[in-house]
Image (tube, rainbow, N blue to C red; front, side, top):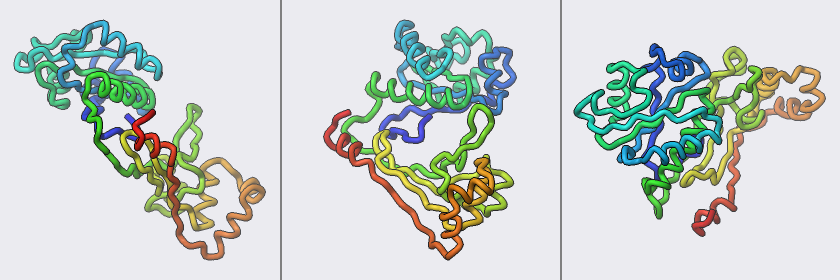
Length: 267
């Protein structure tokens, strides 16, 4: 749900699109069969104690991120199977589908399962934000600890609503493990040689290995729709310089304000 996850929070997003793609409930099957859609859930231990008012509050919260609602499933008695489930959407799901969701999430008695079904970016943002809020509201996030990590393997490009590709990081970031020809043949699946340093859910540093080859740089410009004439006009100096044996080089910039904020325990 996030490219800067807070690992102090034990809640996880679990994908279930394959389990609900054939159900008649279009709220789930629609996104499940959309290549740009996603259906994911969060299992909240002990969450069955949440009141309807609290659940409605969380539904309103995810609406901030574009979600159209928040389906839920309380697991009152795991051993009772479907009979132990309380949910307004259970009537639209078969016993096999419900059991599949319970098994995949490793749900136990007393848990609640919260659903997100929409375009993938909306599900990621909405459930990602909900995960953080639940962690804080229910005391699940381990305060007073540090959870650092490196985030790598970012997509090289991202697609806008009109189908155009844009550089995820910046157009001078090198791709990971492909030639210029391979990149141009299948740019949408390429990963970039970029990395972020994340601490407790905040990006405190980020950087990348730069492109050091003129052919690769021109290929990236081509993919971004920058024609040869515009390349020379705006970046000719760079393309020419890259022909003279530029060595591989990488960088990392720190967000000192965020580091100080975390060290001081402020927001």
